[in-house]
Image (tube, rainbow, N blue to C red; front, top):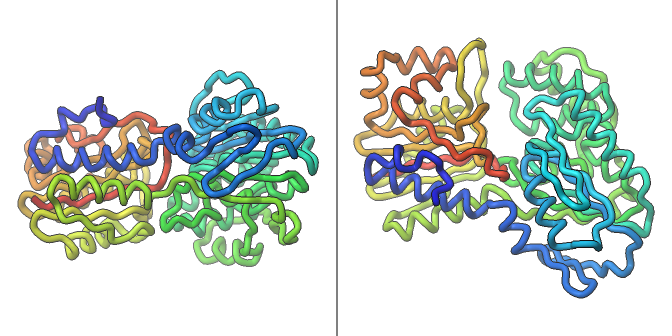
Length: 419
């Protein structure tokens, strides 16, 4: 079975088939349930997460909380591992799932909502009851910035911030810096709430460059930014007025916190490169932290390419949405931009690792014939790009990629394949 649902329809040429196989290797490497099973064990009384271990006999209760796109699958697998040693749990994710102990709830994304605040309030009530002899396992993953929203004042401000950030083209670091300072839980606020319990932060990083303190705006990490830093970003980009608060700075709130990164785009990119080599290509990962424009990305990748090679990049291309009304997503925009720049025989794909590129599609796979097919369907690629209306064109050319929600999230993945 293929992770890409329309694999057969997309695999029209050997180059496209190879690109799809390489993408699937990258998605398989970041499968959340597989990662949890391979990195977390519970034998006797010893819980091991990566290279760290805890004796659960020293704790009165064990709690699990989570938020983000990977939290549903991770929470379900964690419950299976811990069994009846797990006392309480709640996870906010992209789906509702029935578990024995952990209450897995569906929250909204990419915008926060009143429901997200209500769900987070339940999580907060659970956290307020912990003490020094409790262990709290916190599943932190991409999308958590929208799902973990508290107090209610964060909801309205979060919506305004997200919309303003899209218009201004903020980087994820800039966006999450401001998010930390309108929240009661982000930027180490959750660690403060859980103090003095022992906290294990299990992090699935979606941040370009593997900056785990930015994942879900860093609720279990010390925050080194200030209200002044957030205000400077707001002023520089003219985002509007926000009610800012300072994040916890006292070191004691983090003394019993151990954060462990289990997944990142490096894991996926390395798996893609390894599979490309098994197919006979030279393969290189030239970056995992890209945040520039689509044109800069394609130019950089083409400069590093050679015959029979695969060039890989992870990150999030920066878009400034000057006008609304179009249908598409960041990866569709990048892919169609690439289609206007490809040489003979080249194939390019831009894929959202969570399977949702601002909608049901994961992104697109284009090649040197995409523009000809678009023209024959009556589309002007330049016009569609200017209108941020890529999806109708890519649907017409049969270049959209569908995976369904992957339950993972490690930023976007880009591949340039040269036969």
